Image (cartoon, rainbow, N blue to C red; front, side, top):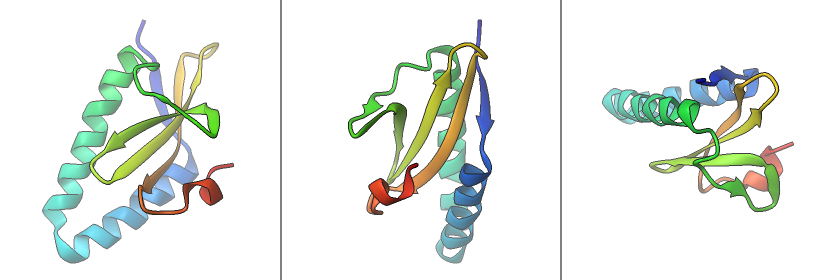
Length: 98
C-alpha cells in the first residue's frame, strides 16, 4: 500500500523561499526542481526507506535533488511521509532541523 506525502508548514515555507529565489534567475529552473522533487517523492511513496537516514538525526531520511535536500520522517503507523524541510545543501543544516 502506497504512503501519502504530507508537507509541513516548514517545508511549504522552504518551497516558497526557493521558488522566489530561483524565479529571479530562471523560472524554468524552479519548475524543473519541483518537478524532480515531486517525481522522487512518488518513488518514496512506494518505498519510503529508499533514501538514506540523516547521520546526525537518523529519524530523518534525506532525499537529494540537485543542490537541495528534502528531509522527511516516515510515520509508519499512519503510512505518511512527513516532509519537514527542503534545504540547499550549502546551508547549515544542523541549525535548521529540529
